[in-house]
Each structure stands twice: as structure tokens, then as C-alpha cells.
Amino acid sequence: MAAFTKAGVTSDVAAKRIAKAVTDARPRTRYTIGATATFLIRASRILPDRMLDRMTTSDLRKHYPPENRDRTTATW
Image (cartoon, rainbow, N blue to C red; front, side, top):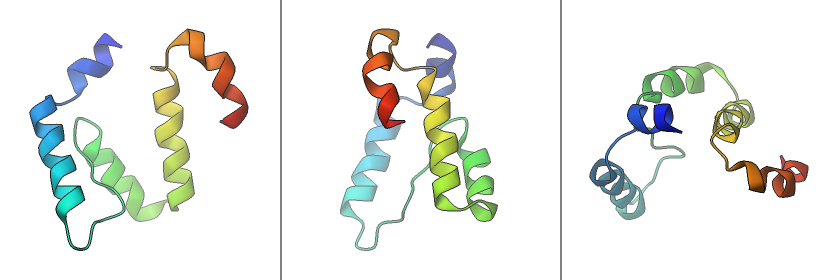
């Protein structure tokens, strides 16, 4: 979790991006911020949305609290 936090962005940066997404007249499908933004942008140009979503969620699984993994594995 510490490595993931170091690669992330501050809460102010994330809040500004969320505010932009909420207030845009024509919001985009995805708003990327942080260390993996460049990779996700490039991958989204060649991969279908579902595959990109799968890659994103598989990366998040390792950061999910272990005590909750057993309850949620059936939905993943």
C-alpha cells in the first residue's frame, strides 16, 4: 500500500479532477491522474473498454484489504 500511495497524487489534485468530471457538460468516460495515467491513456487507445477495466481492477486487487477479499472474490 505504501508504494501505491507514493505513486499517487495529493487529495487536492484528485478533488480538482473529480470536480471537473462532475461539472463538465460532456464528461469523458475516464479521467486519469497519477503515475499510471500515461500508460492508461496509451492502453485505452488500443484496448477495448472492458479489457482496460479488467486491467485496472486486477491492479487494485492487490491493494484491497485481505479481510474483505473473501467476501468479494465471487463478484470479480
